Length: 116
Image (cartoon, rainbow, N blue to C red; front, top):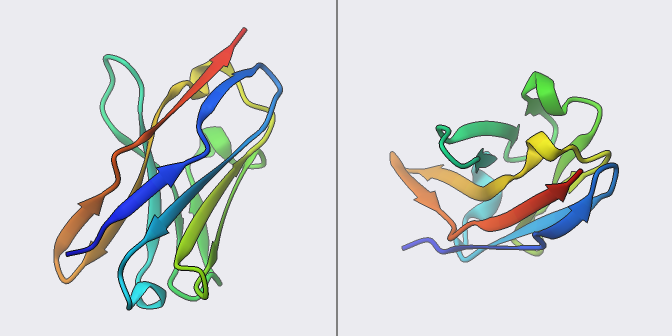
């Protein structure tokens, strides 16, 4: 069983920054790509960013490119999402995700609210 625990969400004004963290319990954390998703009220959950197992490859949806940075520390079993220049449309619950052995694991989510 893999546990993912997110932290770092909160309320911030437009233009502000937050850094989300996701701590994983998997001993083989460094073997897996990691993802951040988000879900806004009334909308489907969407993939925001992905980082490869080594950290060498990253992917972002267009709406966050240049503003968000995904990174990982395999020694700490932790993945991060640095969010800068936040906009009200970034308001959502953010989830950490890993696909391990064909099973998708999710954290409990952390709320990010950006006020205008």
